[in-house]
Every structure is written in C-alpha cells, then in structure tokens.
Length: 101
Image (spheres, rainbow, N blue to C red):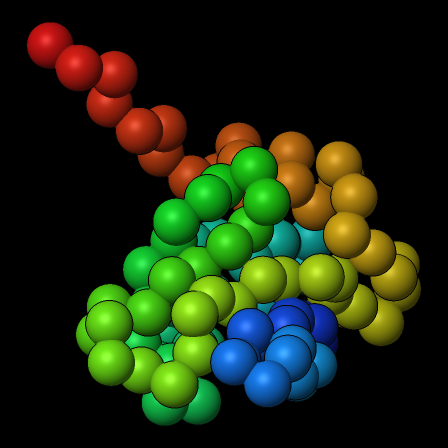
C-alpha cells in the first residue's frame, strides 16, 4: 500500500512543505529506518532527533536546512494529521533511548 508522508523542511527563509512516498504492507506504519531511507532518497541525510515530535536533524551541520518535521501521513484509507496517533505508533515502533548507566 502507498503511504504519503507530509513533512516540513525548515530553511532559513521559512518552512517548505514537501511529501514523500513509502510502500508499506497493509496495516503497517512507517518506522524510523523507512523514514530515514525515504529522506536519503530525497537527498536529505538525517537522523531522528525527537521521537515524540517526529523531528529529524541533518547529519551534516553545513546542510541548508535545520530540521525536518513530519506533519502527517496518508495511506489512502485514514488521513492522519500531526497528532498523538502518529506519534504513539511511531514511538512504539522505535527503540527507546538508553537511560544512562
């Protein structure tokens, strides 16, 4: 199934809304690796910075953008906007950050 990922790229002159496309199995939601790979294909080399807010930061500090924030995704059946549903789903799929030793 196709999943359209809506996101904003934060540039110095303001945010630019963009979309990406992922192909998922029925009932599957995008995971961290799938999202990072999608961004790489779009020439955005990023890492996940904030799981709660779905914010990705560039790996190269010299990149012309400061962050990417996922705002919603659409799988053709349900239209998910930036809300707790998407954050909870992605947060549950991603490994938790280690808490110090």
